Each structure stands twice: as structure tokens, then as C-alpha cells.
Image (cartoon, rainbow, N blue to C red; front, side, top):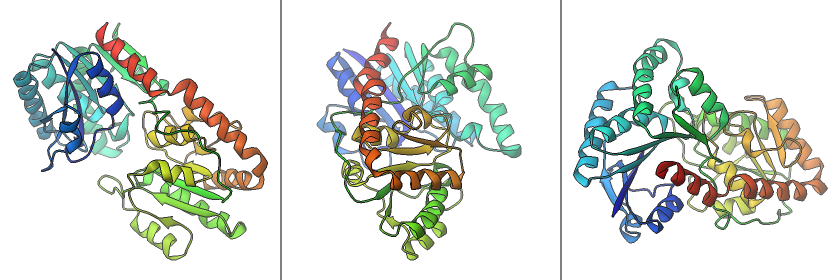
Amino acid sequence: MKKIAILCNGVSSEVIDRKELIKLLQQKGYKTFVGEIFDGTVNNYYALNNISFIPIIASRNNTNPFNEIKSIHSVKKQIEKEKIESVIIYGVKNHAAMSIGSKLGGAKRIMCVVNGSGNLFKINGLKGKLLRIISFPMLWIAYKFSKCVCFQNKDDLEFFKKKHLITGKKEAFVTGGSGVNLAEFPFSFLPESNNFLYLARITLSKGIKEYIEAAYIVKKEFKSCRFDIYGGIDSTIEGSVGDILDRAINDGVVEYHGKTNDVKTALKKCRFFVYPSYYPEGVSRCLLQAISTGRPIITSNMPGCRETVIDGVNGFLVEKQNVKQLVDKMRYFLNNKDKMQGFGVESRKIAEEHFDINVVNKTIISHLEK
């Protein structure tokens, strides 16, 4: 039986975000493995769905070269032990160590998926320069070892070519992000209540500060509108947003619901989806889920966000960290109630035409196998 592993820096107690891809691989006759960080518990989902878990060492922030060496060794050991022939690696921070480890372990086909350029290119100062001096040559080697490299937006592909990380005739292609399951996130008509929703990992670069600042302004004019926030707070790399969030909660400006496993219900209850992120990601999963549900969108004119919006058709693009523009577009949504259902219908069309997860996954597998 053919063997394939999906490697990332997730943790074993949580379910990997590639369920549809794994199911398609299994239908095509692959024995599937998932390699993640073992955090004490392996989620029951893996055993119930005939997925083999393999523990690997992986970096969460890609700033320690000694951890990269450990990661290379652990990946090599598992690939070699299980005799895995094909590997798909998610996350730029993992590509160097995991690609090299997979190659040394005997994998014949390696695909690296660039689901956003991440913090490697974002960190400033001497630390950032040193990190890139170390990382760029390793990434270049990793992509040389790879059969192909998958990008989730065109901007990242062009950026990697500009930095000479992707060179020569290396096969590189672009997909519609990781795609969205159109059946799991069906279209629903907009509720009457003027509920805005922010749903994502809560960190500064994902625009939570701008969302809250806009909420203060808009709520003064439109007292009946509501601003909901869902997501776990992540302050591992960037500064804490706890004080900003706590003040807005205490002032009655936002409602914070914590992390949720029921994204579908949160999206169904909202009338507008707002995600003013400037984090360098592939194509934002929360935006894909929101447009699939048929929600008008306000998001940043940034790679990974702008792919989901036709400006003025299903929503609006605003420049990063521009609270004034964000407020103006929120006002437009509230003042043009008769147009909003049409925006939602257009969102769903975009999801169907460009981001169907079944099409994305077939594209990924076809590039790996050819």
C-alpha cells in the first residue's frame, strides 16, 4: 500500500485541519500518517478514521536553530521507520527541517505547502536579519529536495521567486488557499440583527485592535449593533491583547465568547464578517468559511485576505491598520440594508467558483503524483 504523511507543527490533542484531504488520499489507496507535536494525548479522531499518528519535534516559532536540528532528526527517524514514500509539509517555518528530514529518511516525493509566509519575513531588527541569514539557505535546499511547492496566493509565489527561494524549473503552483467545504458551511440568509463578527486566532497582526477601535466609534452612532469576538488569545510571539480586549468588554462595546468549536453557528448568527488582518497568511480559513456561509465581508487589502473579496460586490477591502476606512465600510453596511443580501449571495458565488475544497485537494494530489 502507498504511504503518505502530512507533517505540520500542530499538536496531537487537536484534529488536523486537513480532514477532507486525508479522506481523498485514503480513497485513492494511501495509508495516511499525520506527524505533529505530541502533547500528551492523541485525538480519538485519528484512530476512528484509520489515520496513523507519528510524533515529531517541530518548531512553533522557528527562532532556535538547535530545535531545527532536532526536528530534522525526528522526522528522518519516523519517515525511515514507517517507510513513508510521499510527504506533504504545511508551514514555511517547518519546510526546512521537515523537508531535509524527509529526504534523509527516504521519502521519494515531497511537497511543501506555503500557507502564508508567516513570521519569518516579518521579524524586524538584528534578530530578523540573523534568522533569515540562517533560514534562507535551508529553505533553498528544502525546495530543491521537494518535487513541487504549493502556494495559496500569487503574491507569495512572486515573493519567493524574488528572494530566489524558488529557482529554475522547480514546479510551483497556486491553489485557492486550503479551500472550504461548501457542504459543511452552507449558504444561509442574513439575520435581521446587525451583528458584526470577528472570528480568528486573537493576536495583534490579525487586526483585533483595529476591530475594537472601530467598534467603539460605530457603536456610538448605531447603539443596537453588536460586535462579537470568537477565538483563542495567542500572545506567544506578539504582544498581549488582553488589556485592549478586557477594556472593550468592560465598556460593553464587544462580546467575547472565547475559542469555539462551533464556527458554523457563530457565522450563521452574524450579519457581517470583519477581519482586518495584516498577518502574512495563505488565504484565511475564517474568510473562506464566512464567504461560503454567504456573509458580506470587510477585510484588509493584503495577500491572503483580498483574494476573498471583489470590492463593492461582496464586501470591501480596507488598507491595513486603517481604522477610519474600517469604520466607513461598517457604516455603509448598516446604512444599506437592502443591498446586504446581494453581497452575501456574491460571497457564496466566489466560494463556489474559486475555493471548493474538493477542487483544491484534487489539484494538490495531481501535482504530487504526476
